[in-house]
Amino acid sequence: MPIDDLSRVIATLDNLSSEPGPPVRVELPNTVGWLVRSHDDVRTVLSDDRFSADDQKPGFPFLFNIPNPPGGLSFLRMDPPRHDVLRRVLTPSFTVRRIEAMRPAITRASQDLLDRMRSDGPPTDLVEAFALPLPSQVICILLGVPYDDRDTFQHHTRNVVSLESYPADAADSYREIGEYLHRLATAKREHPGDDMLSHIGRQRDAVGMDDADVVAMARLMLTAGHETTANMIGMMMLLLFNEPQRMRQLRGDPSLVRPAVEESLRRASIVRSALTRVAVADAQVGGVTIRAGEGVVLGLNGANHDPAWYDRPEEFDFQRDARTHVAFGFGVHQCLGQALARLELQIAVTGLLHTFENLAPAVPLDEITMKNWSLIMGPQSLPVTW
Image (cartoon, rainbow, N blue to C red):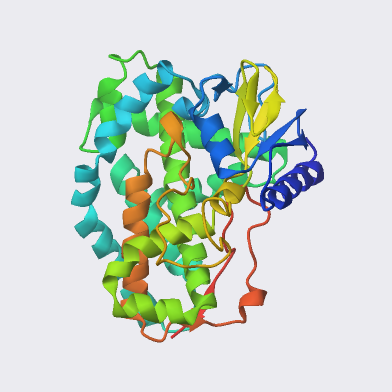
């Protein structure tokens, strides 16, 4: 689809998602489908097996300028039972116990970055100096990817999620990441370590995975594991900069960090209108009939701002219980790495606020450039001082 058209479709979906209401008919890149945007309706679609995540089914809506081979996005684009089989391969790496065991390593990585920021002095770009490097280091440790290769995979990830990438460029980046991970996975089969990619290699034969399946799973973990959390760190800090009294509250009461993270996830949903399904049977949702073969886009931002679920949803209030948000999805496909993302956010915001007591934006907030070109929202850069 032409770049301008794709950007226009996403912008329209975002605008409609911000308005509470029943499902509405929308123009999608390859079809006409539905935008579902209330909290109840989003949960219904994500938990009802009449809606499929399988991108090979007729009518599935596409919002990416990348190739669409079967299994290309691993279990993210599969239905049970195959989805469940592949997801279970990774489950041991994301248990609460395993993630909590990573706390010391993540804290050290965070503090090392903060110490470097302090040594270099203000002003600095928080995205480049901290928000992107931290989750990149963490996913490299977990997956078993050399951090020295970060420039390569960060560049290609940006191309894949960009609405402004030409299809050929996005396809090249998609292929380059795959070839890189295939080489790495092959090496780890011969010399396995204590990392996720080695674990996938040990499990592949038992669950019927081939090389393409291994690459797809690793690509999903690598791209999702750093790009989303990096943007969420930036968005959370923007929320706090916009309400300095909230920042003071967090500094004074560490027990508020967890609810502040949940409220940030609700208030600033970074995954734009990119979660998609296709109906495989007629279904009633929000008073309308969605026919088999019709595509559905889930408006997570609308769901997380639904006044039927959240009083004064536009307010950033971490005194509320925001744990019902759908920032990580809902149902069998909800984000496998959400415990890791939460931990990284908690460590990141705690480290920032306690290392820099006078942390503040170095430019007016209305001058911050957002990633309107990306399917994952966040600040392009975030100049800060202290």
